[in-house]
Length: 116
Image (cartoon, rainbow, N blue to C red; front, side, top):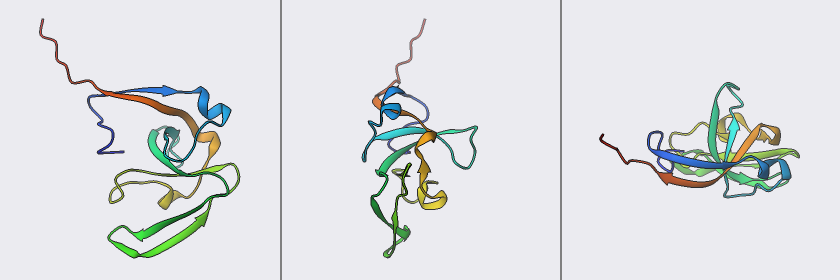
């Protein structure tokens, strides 16, 4: 999620109830267990819900070549904001909804240094 989220200096408030109630939709940033390494938690933006058709460029540098996928039931389609350097559903496919652990509800920059 770089540059949208800064790994050092951002404070995130996440909601763990919304995913359990199904209150996650396109445009939301979610925290999920990585489908490739379940020891990692990643932040991605939801682009499609079950039944949605998602069209994405096959090569980020060439917008002419695209692929369309229908998101299967019980899954979501997630992508990182940095299209040129993001490991997301374009590589590992639709993500099971059960891997979603939270929905980001608030972000603030925390760069204040206190000298004592």
